[in-house]
Length: 67
Image (cartoon, rainbow, N blue to C red; front, side, top):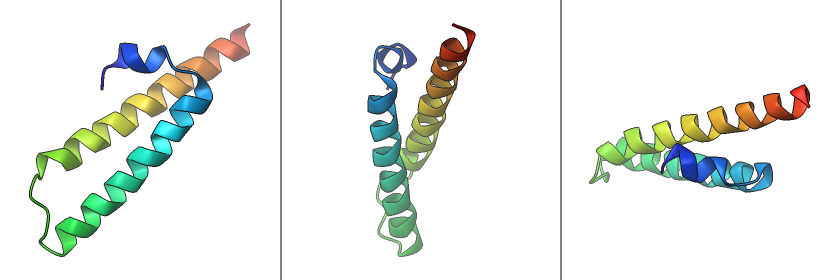
């Protein structure tokens, strides 16, 4: 997921995306704990996607506060 794609979304869409990513991260952690995780790199990608979404949300909030 690219930051440019995220900047084009609304705050509500970003929050929905964040919820979905957190659910996926939970499921991946559960799979890792039970030794069922096949793609360990996906955990890192999801963590970084969560950080990207949070960053864009913070930027949008700062823009709204400045205006």
